[in-house]
Image 1 (cartoon, rainbow, N blue to C red):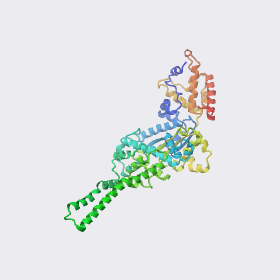
Image 2: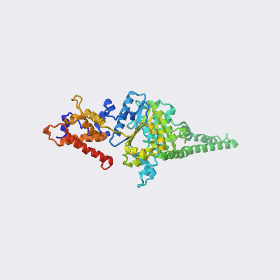
Image 3: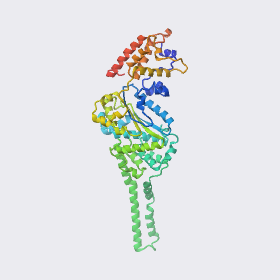
Image 4: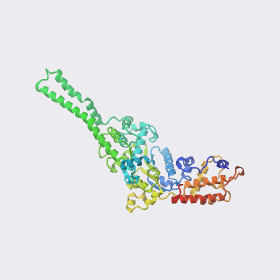
Length: 516
């Protein structure tokens, strides 16, 4: 018998236990999008603690084994936020997925190692600072906002309906804040031209100071030429000392005009280039060229180009001020909260599951001031290896991190009963609504009790391994009977054989002596 025949007999449209990765699992997507199942059977009991109150975003720190459901939690957070935003259009939450870390880590490694091919990434990662993470988060958020206003990328709905119209209703100060954020943090602006497009969308003219200097550069030659023309065409009127005075005045005006040209086309460019270089040097997670930053800064009002505003040092105060500006812009669009979800720390190429490298990346984030910002919630979904490293830290580290205030989930664990409910929810999601109700234990022979299945699942520990266990039970049974036997239930012997084999596999996986 093949597995398709077995599933067809039970009116199961697709194998509920085939998926092993939440991002690619169609069954999980259906279950998670069900408001009832997604809130109860398909969600971990700690999910509500991790999610928190979306009207007051908070930080959560979660440690879990591979396959324990961290990525599923990330996806469920996204779905719950979507429903929250639909119900609260004036108090929405923006989710930033901080899980594609390859580009950020490659950039800082290249900078710290200075292009050395044999440099140790672990040494580079040990120099990561909190401000590097804040810069990366700002870049993610600012790029999303600018894309929405410009109508580019996949962020069109982030700011709600008619984002351009709403953006034009901002105050001048708020528009300048958005232009400043774009100039410094817009990852998509590689040549500095998006700033001019943004100002055009906002109907924001050039900065007053720049407009004045451009006007002087364009028309500053006129007084000098008029003075020269007066001497040439009115020599019978202007003679002697007055003529010399006119000459001096004309020459002075022409020299002043040349000075204006030097300022506009030489000095300003040099100063902007220096500013761009200083900012680019500090933005070690970002690959935006310094000349692109300089090209954008020329459209920023002069008072916002000061050292007190721009992130030209390693100080975190400038970054917190930038975050406050971003939150102010988002609030104008009805977005009152920001959730940053960090996941898949072990997957980047330069990390490759190494616990020391993951620790170097994540540990700068354990700062109570950063984790307890108003309106900003960090959701750190971390591998279990970092939990072991955490317990080796000093009391000074814990005093700074204040993990007692961060909704800490030390281990994302699952009991057999929890896994039974989860697998049952997946089974129901794969059957038509008009089908007769069945339970998970109905797939097994009558001598298999519900407790037998629960006990077997308890030894799997994680959803991924529970799915593998049930998938193998069905496959083993189908491979040992013929199609005309019409044997539609899995015997207890098969259950016990698969349980022993899968339990041993899980234990070997935890000891690190088998791949999966």
